[in-house]
Each structure stands twice: as structure tokens, then as C-alpha cells.
Length: 214
View 1 (cartoon, one colour):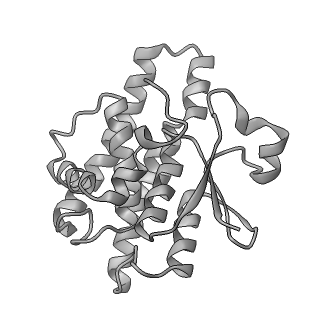
View 2 (tube, rainbow, N blue to C red):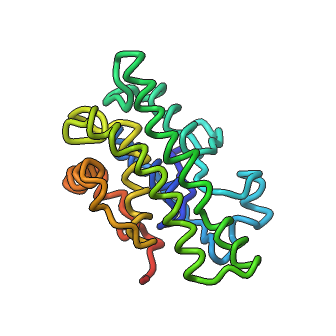
View 3 (cartoon, rainbow, N blue to C red):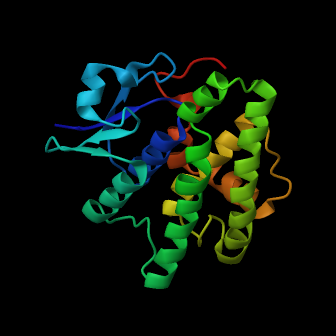
């Protein structure tokens, strides 16, 4: 059976996995999960992913994987070429740290669940935007010197890594929330380089089958 990715077009966590799958040259079926309509809370989807989140990846042998970083690490172990992690152990730690800043420190504070809870607490549109900008800027301030030091076109080195799989979706989210990239020239340069790469272009939210007009 083919790989099946349960995804939502502009959610950044499955966006990371789409990039990873494309970089590995792996074909997959796309199963849309409309987060805004609450499809993730259905009994059918909850049976697949108890957290009621995307992504979920069903493997060729029928196993279901969740959590984007775990899925990307699985891809690296099962399909090691081309690599998403450098050969050197220290370099791998740096790449994982870069990915973690996005996946563990920025994104969880800005995803749909948090936005919906802020709304329920009475935070207006401007307040939610300021909230999102705060955490994106905090993370980007930490990432910028790392990319400036280690990047050679991409976030780490001259080829895409796990860091880019996480960074590029977060740049997309930064644009959504009105975060200017002027203070982050190294991040902006890595994003521009990635935009020229077919694996990143094919993973872009606007190119997904469930994409809808903004």
C-alpha cells in the first residue's frame, strides 16, 4: 500500500512532512483533514491519531506515525538517502536544535488550538496577531545567528536538512502573521533558496489539493 499523509493545507506541521517526503523522493497519497471544520475531532480520525492533530502518516506496512519530528526522523532512518541530517554528531545536534526551536518553541504557541483558545478567552484579532508575532520573533532571533553561522545556502550547509523542513513552514506562518523578515537576513536567504527547490515548491500550502482561497 502507498504512504498516506493526513494533512491540512496550511498547517505547518504536515507542511514539514511534505517537504521531507518530497526531498526523499517518496510518493504518497494525500488525505485532507479540514481542521477549521473540526474533522480532526471525528471518531474516525481520533482512532487514527488520539491527539486529534495533523500530521498522521500511514506507512506502507499499515503503521500510523504521528508528530512531525518523529515522522521526519523515521523517514531519515528508513530512507537515508538523501540525508536530512549531517554525518557529524555535533552538526546533527545543531540541526536538531534548529528544528526544535521551530517545532517545540514557536509553533506550539501559535497553532490553531491556541488561536481558538485565545478567541474563547476574548482576545481580539489584533491581540492574537501580536501574540503570534511575539513568539515567532523570539524564535527567529535565536535562529538567525545559527543560520548565519552554519548556512551555506540552506539553513545548515549547502543542502536541505531537517532544519529547513521546519524553518520554511515557519517562514510561511511568519508571513501570515505579518512578521517582517528584514531583521533576519540569513533566514530570509535560506527561505529564498528553498523556494527555488522543487521539493519545497511542491510542498507549499497553495499547491495542496485542499487549498482554499485566503
